Structure formats: structure tokens, C-alpha cells
Length: 222
Image 1 (cartoon, rainbow, N blue to C red):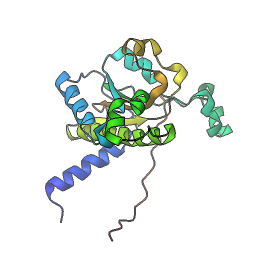
Image 2 (tube, one colour):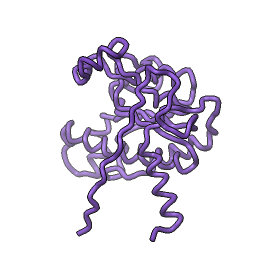
Image 3 (tube, helix red, strand yellow):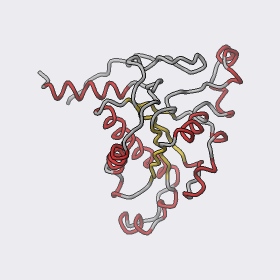
């Protein structure tokens, strides 16, 4: 039998599973919570404890809105959509609402760390091939983003991932002063307070709002 704490944690993870498509944008998030969430994200495991990615938290409402516009299929990804779907959409674009949240976390790879002195010292060998390094770094980003998402859900917030974004629509000028290449963006995570209990509800019909049930997994213990 599960304890109350175990049941509560499982419920939290199941909340995290849902992609929140509505947020109460009248609320603001305390800076101490933002700092805590960043600490959570940067405290997860990475290979040799190396620093291969950067997390950017956007809290400015105007800038979040600019990023959320890019949360759509890019021009080179429209071949994934059926002809009937394209016909129903404005300009053949699926607009995702989960990034228009109280906070937006952006996860960037840092390619320069692949050949850094620290990596050379700790791994004692040649830099890994690009493809292998990117794959490993994205695993690390997944761990960090998941930790942030679960942590946020433990305090009543809700979250939504978005990997479909149009690089051409990103507000590049916002990133330039921080020496961040927008092409290095790997995933966005909207974090905020839910407007409705039902995570799929949205008042604007142009947004994608579908949700699918998870298959029941095999729990293999050997």
C-alpha cells in the first residue's frame, strides 16, 4: 500500500504529464521561487558534472509573448501535417499556447563546452563527436527540465513543454546581449498558475488543445 506521501508525489507527476494550455496571467511569480526553480534545474546530474547547457528564465510578460509566437511548426516542418489539417489552419501553422505562461524556461546547449579544458581534464580524451555530444546534452536537459517541472507542480503551478518552434520567429535581439545563439535552443517550458482545472481548455480556438491518453506501460521488474 502506498503512503499518503507516495500517492501525493505520483499525483504531482501525473499533473506534470499534462501540457497546460491555459494560465492565469494576472498572477506574478515571486523571484525567490524563480531562483529556487533554477537551482533545481542546475542541480540535476550531468556527465562528469560538466556544464553543457544553459537555462534562461523569461519573466517579462512582453518577452514571453514574443517567444510564445514562435511556438509553432516552422516552415520546414509543415510536411508532417496532413492536407486536411493544413487546410484548417491559418497559414498552415499550429499555434501552441503552453509557452504563454507566467514564466518561460528556455534550454540552450553550449557547444563550446564540448571542447573545453574542463571536459578534456575530466574525460581524459578527445572531444566527443558532435552528434553524440548533442544527444547526451539533450538527455541532461531533459533531466533538468523535468526536475523544474515536477518542482513547480509540487507548489500548485502547472507546466507545458514545447519542442515545435519556428527559429525564424524567435526574438533574436533579446538574446544577443547575453551571447546566446537562438539556434542552440532545444526546448521551451511554460510554467505558471492554471486558469482552469482542465489543462486543455482555451478561450481562443486557434490554439491546439487536444490531449491523448497514455498507454498502460509494462512494469518489468527482473
